[in-house]
Length: 146
Image (cartoon, rainbow, N blue to C red; front, side):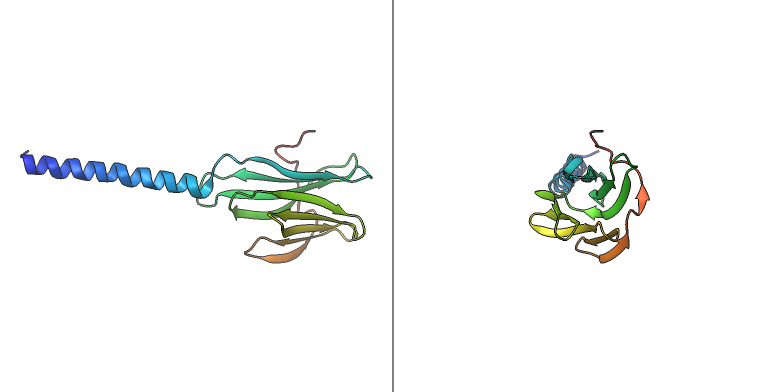
């Protein structure tokens, strides 16, 4: 292999390494992996529990965000919020006693709510807005404390 060929191979190899490094940095900057866990929770005076958690998907759909609910001594129920979410931050789960509603906000924006009177769950994840019967499935939060 002559000197010119070696230089071309070396340049190509370093270009591949550089592009790979740029893609890895971009992935880490966009996905921000590692934010698994409970984002917020609230327990009402009757003992009902409500939890919002996110799980890193380690892929093109960065995070799955889910809502969990259970009445005192009942089984956990699950409601969908998003499966293509960016990393959620500054999440609050509050109980609006006057409306009998659990409200989920992310960075001050209302993202979901559970109407406890008629068991309907509303979401607006930026892509879809809809009301569904709650819960949509069964299952405990992955990060529940009990």
